[in-house]
Image (tube, rainbow, N blue to C red):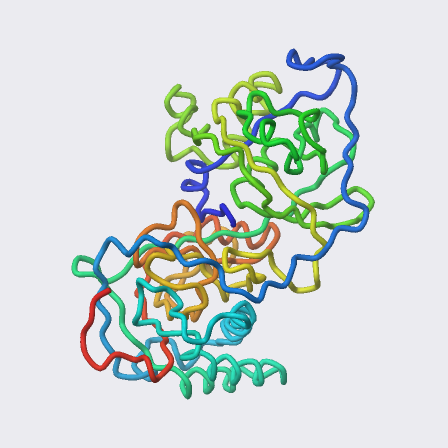
Length: 413
């Protein structure tokens, strides 16, 4: 599971964290001996993310909104197709195929979406894609693969021809093993006790569960929003903090709290403005603000393989600029989408440039609802975050279905 959400403004309305005072000058009234310092205990040799070869469960809920699928004229009619490099999509697609290895070939990818066929319908495309990926293909080779094995199908709804595309990323968070005035917020592992796991944020602190590391409050806040991140220790080690669990409490936006108080406008509710608010008001006020949100996210450590992103809901590593989060009620994990949209050309580029992008549906998120809503994974680190934070543009959808599944006439799902 993941809880990433695209766009800074949207993200602030989804998740948050709390500042836990850890120095003697900021006593914690909820615990004995508040001046004691809790040392972080990261796993010495954390495992890598497991390779899962069974499909993620499909949602039982049918799509609540009708979708119109119309066979497209051909790839040559797709704007930007001939100049796009589909190798990230090929990498993402073949990784997704690995999670189907032990699926029942006769089973539908999603019983509520029969137009996407069975795992058997995708088997030959998966095998051909894996062979091509193994030889490090060029962009033209990858493009030829998709043209040979798939057919484009235009997607819309009765009321809208396109949808919203935002972006998300995996942040890199600088951390310490001991708390300081700067690195005061604990990143906690999942508690073994269910009663502790369900505690609201105001009752969670460095003594209620094992501490993985300490980070800056605003950094841990956005780590929880994104659902995964890379921890950068002072000694140079880097580990992944992967989503482990949440406490089941209802979310309350701290950005909305500040707006409601009149301390900033909705347009000002960004990471930078909230960080500035924390700095001005100090640790006690920061903690009180964060505790307005009772929801809490726990993590687990994982080793980071070279050039490998975090796992999405499909349980395969996400590929930079090759994977999206979707509403799985409308699109099975592993399906392919061509997006005609606008993307930033550099960090902070709000205007962006019109282009096309082939991606695989491999993730989901609480804010990703509807048949034409998607969140693009930009990658890891600050550069990816600065691009993802400004990604908020319309996108026209074209599905890529195995040729045997391409509809011959209009259909709805």
